[in-house]
Amino acid sequence: MTSRLSPREILAQLVTFPTVSTGSNLDLIDWVEGYLAAHGIAAERTAKPSEPDLKAALFAHVGPEVPGGVVLSGHTDVVPVAGQVWSSDPFVMTERDGRLYGRGTTDMKGFDALAIWAMVEARARGVTRPLQLALSYDEEIGCTGAPDLVAAMAALPQASAVIVGEPTLLRPVTAHKGGISFEVHVHGVEVHSSILERGVSAIMWGAKLIEWCNAVNAENAALPPGPLAVLFDPPWTNVHVGQIRGGTAQNITAKDCVFTLGFRVVPGEDAADWRARLEAKVAELQAQMQAVQPAARIELRDTFHLPTFAPAPGNAAEELVRRITGDNAIRHVSYGTEASHFQAGGYDVVVCGPGDIGIAHQPDEYLEIAQLEAGQQFMERLLEQLA
Image (cartoon, rainbow, N blue to C red):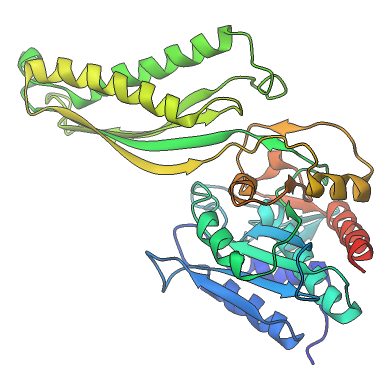
């Protein structure tokens, strides 16, 4: 039988797979599936419906075929390294000064390695409550792979707790904002810029919608936060434009302007209401554009929808992690995770994993060795709970 690898050895292997969201994760999935199989653990994979030859999720079960177990949830994709300056190869884990450098060490292959280690240990030691593994794709582009994975896991006995291992310095997080995101395509009408009033500049009209975003942020910041929003930073829903492109030349009104626009929605507010407000503003601007040129228009395309992850009374996952860590502080975060999709699927969920979210996505991303070791201690205590 294949020897049992340490979490550090597993992490080093996972980092070698360049599972950037724009590419494939199948080499990593193949390795994990094979490693688990070598230790008597059968895993199931579910292919991405639109790209079955490029991406897949994987889930597995150890222990008795009964409900009431624990799911260890992680994602396999990482953000790009293009344009970043690294001190060492981002896809070779390198130790320096008590840190393990490499893309994904913190976000979140460190937790993935711990989860895989725990599955093999659970199989070797035996457990009376099941331990399950869930590894997804496309988390970094809006948690879009999680719904299919959650649905596929209905084939397993229902777990009573899900631990989503995003980096929290191994402190429990019990709520986060949701999100909706759109690609906005403003279709203008080209004329020479000397007679721009006869055309429609997609860029200049797109700027009106972007300025509306700034106004919404100012308006929301000035309002007193609601009871669920008050523990978030910032304690309101915000809207952000992260990328923009368009135009042909300086002396031509822009035919096209394309940008991303997304809302981070606090629990207690409905993303559908924000969609409706955006659609109303788009309709208002489009009518003004078409009064100049009927062919002008604004097109909205959904890119993702992440539900809010709301605090839940009697949350078994929260209670479990608080027993393990001894940490009873209340923490809500503004970034999103797959916890909300598991919650929407009927699970009790908590977010807790090694590493600092502030280090995620950065050049020279690293995981403190001390955090990996603390994560292993966390898993040891979890296995004691399941024994």
